[in-house]
Image (tube, rainbow, N blue to C red; front, side, top):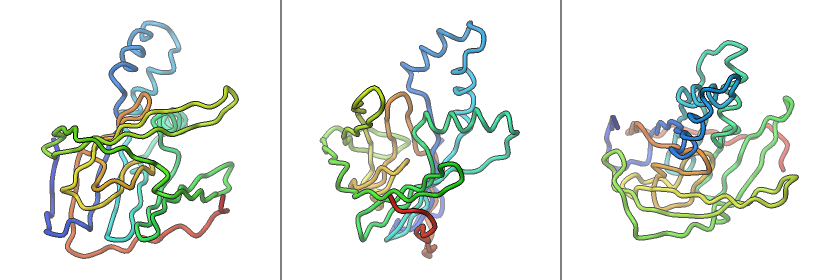
Length: 214
């Protein structure tokens, strides 16, 4: 059930809560393997359902990060794998004035800051709309390119955003649309807004300074 709390007129200060869901087509593939022993996807499916993320935003900045939960060492390995596969690899910070997003990556206990222009997403806005959790949302699409040992891999992205919530941010560093991204579809996972809180006063969000720029 979608929940609004602390509704205020400006809607520029708040917290948005997201969960990850497995794409139904991918879930069918996982279920088809469920009778096989040592199927790692069964564990990933379980831990994906327990992931929660928070996007905190004000008029000029935002930060998207994981809501930390207590896990055992064994559970932590499966949880980390589920996060990475679902598209989350660390906090992302948004600077709306400079139109940039900074990803904070932890490689072997060394922090790196990876900066990206929000315009580089090259969103294609459409007139298609859909109601998601009582919000009227509009469809936007783009493609991101990953280069690996198997060559260049192009990944289609679909975002559903609402102009009723006045912030151009969204999950996993995706941003630059005319409103909050309510649902993001990427590869085998869907990230969807479940709850949002608005505040009358602005909470300061510190942009990251610790880390090696890349």
